[in-house]
Length: 347
Image (cartoon, rainbow, N blue to C red; front, side, top):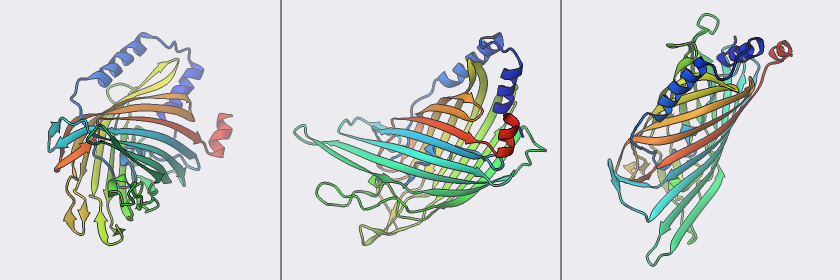
């Protein structure tokens, strides 16, 4: 089944499409309105327990016998100190998370596919001390790997304009959880690359193409993590990250400026329960967030594209006092190796 991107590239080859037609300018104007619509700012809390789910699981399903690679870099600046829904004035502490993720997608059949995500995470924390000193702490290492089995609920032959995919699988405890500070004391769980637990991941992806106009589509992505226990926290305690729900809803507009470009805007709702330590709620964990995520995807050919996006806060309410996201920046490269049959047809 041809995707919208394949169809657009075929039109470019067979038709004389000028990059700056009236239709393109209208599309650009609509897309800019989508990206620049005024909203208040909101971030995301410290950590998701080994894998930053907001920046991973960005692929749908691969076509039958094709292989996809998605390389993502995610920069998360946590500079806002919140108490409930109130932003506090504080310039003494900041957190930064750098995440590099490799996501691999393989199509087993026209409707089944397998996905694996391997993250590398660096956590940085800086605290200003009395007298003007700086207490800087950093950890880095392999995060927790995710493995999913995905299935297309809708038959692509019967519903070519709609795609609904569901997936489920484990998040393995592959990241370290025993980093210490300069004094040799164990760092907090949200400063560790890994979670130390075996979690369950449930995922859903829905897209409806050609809404309002042939170039506009609606998308919704839902991710839920059911957290397990780290039974060796500080060697004697049991730590459990709060269960996490993310719901992303937005629109995507296809246009042509020298090459095919997708402009998109999403709203992300995120809810995370409080972390538990020995069965008791851990102070300063859990909350609800709403973010706006504008971005652009540039398609260099049907098998290679680059995506840039940002994340700004709209609403947030946290449990207790927490550092939370000021903004996020994400860059990703997608490369697709088509099946041998499709490659021969293309050639």
